[in-house]
Image (cartoon, rainbow, N blue to C red; front, top):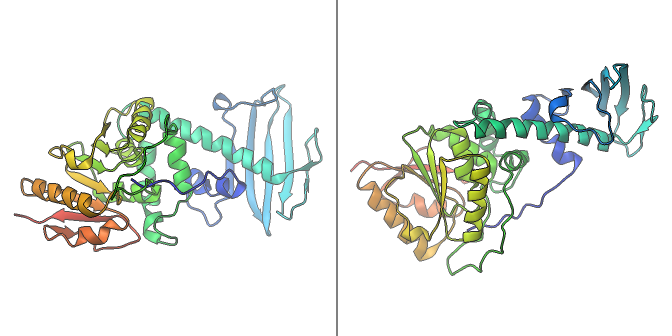
Length: 338
């Protein structure tokens, strides 16, 4: 098991980092246009305007922001200001209630509202069954984030905020137990690597992904949300299994199941692809690799690994690396023909 080291950061920088998800690839991800979705929005205090369109364009070292629409009574509205990020309030034209604006808070609130609407759309799509078409459409762009390798392989980024917003995993109801010898603290696989895994493996309805040391289930849940494959999470910590099961139930993801079990005792017979993010080491890892080798003697399988265990798995003579061994990405291996 690996434990998350990343704190939740609610800042303008974090919100802006999600902009490529909402707007597509652009040279400046903060530039774009937002249209108010009144059906999915709440105004406190009200009343809600009938319409509003916010446009952000680059302006020197900042942004020019305009908003046009109709208020609750149908009266036209128009607001205009320029964000310079110099720590000072910016003058605002067209706002009857104020003549300056704390631009960071305003822009953050706008982006957060759009993010929540985006998450709700994808969650509703997942609950209706079948892979999410929206997530599938974004897979190539998401996977490219892992291939660029511009940051440490195990660090987190805006795609983890995206995954969290979609999955909305509940916190553990009880504390995790102390780790036994050779067990590794829990740390979720960065979302960009999960999307890269999904993009490269091309899983079908005939596949079963087995995550050995699945933690709170991020990999099985996202794979089930994006593909028709079945997924199984094997995790020794009951508190994490409970979180994963609750998340799967909330999303109506029947294709994702979770078992509270030692990986050495797991039934591996249904798996076609096995994933390990260094959940254990030493004799436990050896026993699991031997169990996988036994499965490979019966049928072709694939093994995907990430983290420190990659070097050990790459030494297995019954496996061949598909795209070489790259410490910056999930490594995929195929069992050698008998």
